[in-house]
Structures are given as C-alpha cells and as structure tokens.
Image 1 (spheres, one colour):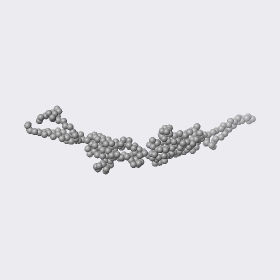
Image 2: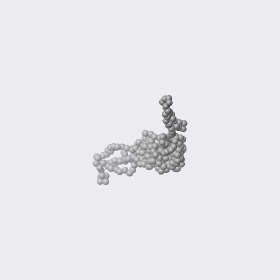
Image 3: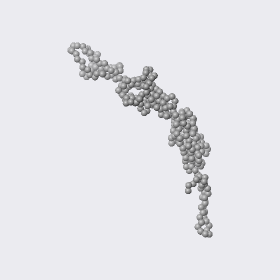
Image 4: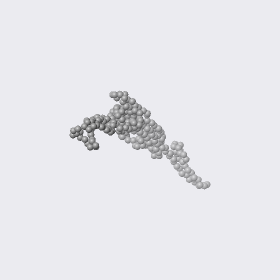
Amino acid sequence: MDVQPGEDNGQYSCEVASGEGMQPASRTFRIIIRAGPKVASFSFRDNLHEGMRTAVTCIVLGGDGPLSTRWLKDDEPLTEQELNVNILQEEDGSISTLTFKNLTYKHNGNYTCIVTNDVASGSYSATLTVKVPPRWMLEPSDISTVAGRPARIDCQADGVPQPHVRWKMAISQPPEQFKTIVSSSHIHILVNGSLNFRSVEPSDAGYYLCEANNGVGSGLSAVVRLTVHSAPHFLTKFMVVSTRRGDKVTIDCTPEGDRPVTFTWRKNGALLDISKETR
C-alpha cells in the first residue's frame, strides 16, 4: 500500500465472519501518516565582496512538526560566534534565516540547512563566494646573486578568485617602462607566481615588476631589483712568459669580475710573499 499523507490518514476496521449464526469479529486500526520535511532551494547572491552584508533563508515547504533546524558550513556545525553570523528561526522551525553582517574571506564555503522531525530529515546546500582583492602571501623583495647560479624572486598572492601573476622587466632607467616576460628555458614563471632563473646571467641584472590581479580592486604591484655579481675569473687560464736571464719581466694578473678582489701569488704551488720578495 502506497500511503499518502492527508489522503490515507484515518480509522480502518477489519471484520471477520467464520460461519452462519456466529458473531463476526472485528478490529479497528487508526493510521496516522507523518511527512518528513521538504526544504526549499535557496542561493546566495552573486558578486558579493568583503565588507558587504547578505542573508539566506531556509524555508520548509512541507512536513509535520515539531521541526528542528541546524546549519552546517563545509559539512561542519556552524558556530555563530566563530563566523560572526546571526541565525534567526521561527518558533515552529519552518523558517531559518542566516545573516552575515560583514562578509570576509573566511565566509567562503558551502552552507547546508538541515531540517529534522521525528520521521525524517530534509536538507539543501548552497555555496557562498565572497570576492576578495589580492593580498600578499610572499611579497617580492630585492635579491643579490652570483652569475651562473639559480635564483628565484618570490611573488605569491592570494584572493578570490585566485589572482593572476604577471612579470615584467624594466627597459628604461629609472624603471618606468617595462616589457612582459614570457617563460622560457632560461627564465620561468612558476605556478605559484614566483620568477625562477635557471642560471643567472649578468644581463639579467635590473628591475622587475610583479603584478597580481583578479578583477577585484586595483590589484597589487611591486618593483624589485636583481643584482648580479660576477665572481673573479680569468679569460685565459694558462700563460707562458719567456724572458732572458737578468731581464725584468711583468706578469699580468687582471681578472674579470666585481671589485674589490684579493690577490694571492704562488710559485710552483707554494705561497709567495710579495712583501718580502726583493726582486
């Protein structure tokens, strides 16, 4: 029997007669059909930003009381104090309104309204998206490195939606004009937004601009300087100088690289003290 609330509620009797002249036997039953709660669909408004106010209402379309209503956020019990929200419910539990007085980043998530009576439960869920302008997770800063070494300039931002990071390199001094950097085998923009150099070259030295935008607010930008130092090195690793006995000779030792540098002379592998050498 497929019972229907309202239609099949009532009193039912079963009567049994076993033979002629015998009093029939009967039994009476009363059927009370209780309906589980049915929750109406609801949704949050679009284009909500931090600092705004909003509310959503959970309405029970049908179901027998008494009703009990509770809210979840991301499948966890919602706490008014923790999220700074208000929950206002009708006495019979048929309507519950969730109010946000000051939307913030932490309010993003999935909200579920669950309504229960003594026979069943009903629920509905909706996602709240609060748009948040970019904010620095790792703000870029000036770095110094040595040519030939790998290097990374951090530039990591968070927000809703996730910000897009773009890098540019200055083509003027002072750094007022920039050209966009395209990832290559030498220089690559990582997934997290940082700029990675596989092996820094002297030509990489200069000013770099990191921009983070997600369409909310004015975005973030920072200009940093990459300083590339050159370690001392010789263009010619080995040199033979020929002279005659008794003649004066000059051996040139002019390295490439950043100044200042410290010189050390050796003869046949042994340290040579120039200050004590009379010749």
